[in-house]
Length: 231
Image 1 (spheres, one colour):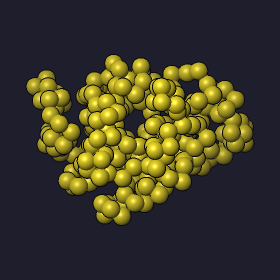
Image 2 (cartoon, one colour):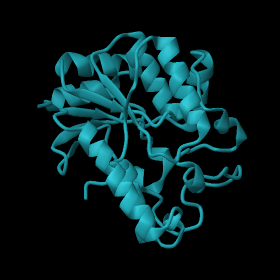
Image 3 (tube, helix red, strand yellow):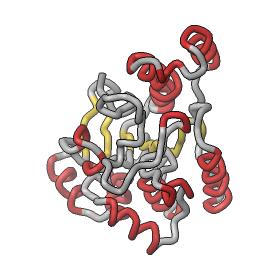
Image 4 (spheres, rainbow, N blue to C red):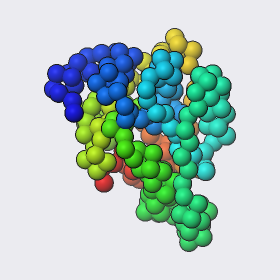
């Protein structure tokens, strides 16, 4: 779908230019998943302000911080465009809670990954059905797992392209862009929460800690939920 020249061109452009170019190459079937984190708020701002033909959605796991809902509401009011919301299947959640317990994800890595699969991965897969390009706010600096990512890559399991326009940004660049463009973000970021997921599975981090250290803080793992895994 993309030629080598188009990929090279995309990688050389700034954020806004790259999103414009992407929509020029693929005029339909582009979708953006936002977790309402700082990186995603930047991309949302560009998409909505420029009325780009990109479907924007978020996942409501049922265990988010109140601040997530407040920011989502503020986004809808500011941009006059609603972000679509996908929920987990009620039966999946009921079965998990009745079998593993309301906080069963604390008991093992396997339990936690199953919870993530039910509350995040399955709704994501529904949202991505029929999409050609999936835009994400991933940055290589966020974790070791993400340092080998490409700006534009093929997701074999979902049969679509993933476009990571902020891949080579560092956190200082994210903060500067937010300040310069007066972009709304979660108040939690000013309280030590750099990477924010579900409330029980996220804690604030210390200044010297990896940004992902606050996610699933009680376990030793690769700190991923499966959203960006090809398995």
